[in-house]
Length: 240
Image (cartoon, rainbow, N blue to C red; front, side):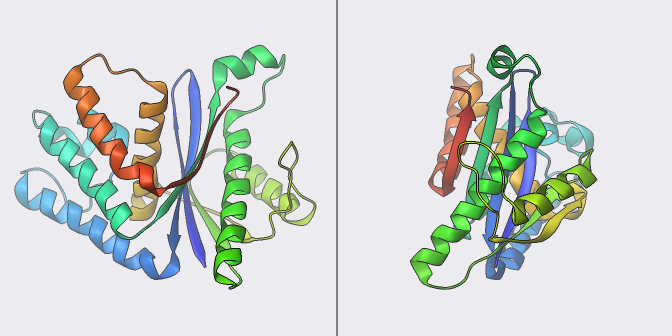
């Protein structure tokens, strides 16, 4: 069984949903490694709580529970690096689908909700990846979807229910026959693996849509993204 943890990262110009895909046997060990990242941070930096959420926006900006590390940019980037290293160590894979909101608006007089659109595409790619694993291993392979809490959860569940039975729509329309049950929404603070998905999606969005003006920031973000890149199995920004 594959466990796909979905989270979003967006700006005024782009919207992304990423899925961190973890084999069932790796889920607990990866969670333990992420807990260890926080345990080290709590031991080394006064004011950091071991239960603190790994949230990319707050970690990078030293907001929320990360405020005590406001003057420790290098250390915060180091924590980010530890998370991405753990993702690679447990061979979790990353699938991400993005929307250029400005181009989308220019193409359509009534643009679709970017979250719904990106979610559909991400589910399709997870479905395809499960099929790929099944072909390579000759073992039936399925995926369970777990996502950060968002609005319109019932609508997203209904859309998945339909896609599992009659298919999605669009040029890569397919029946989502490798995705089991429903999509489970849970608050990200309760799941280290959702938090890891958040950090992966944030760094991907930043590296593919944002131009750094500070050479030091460019070097730091390039180093972080280099840790994630080998784990990426599906990616797209639409429209190009």
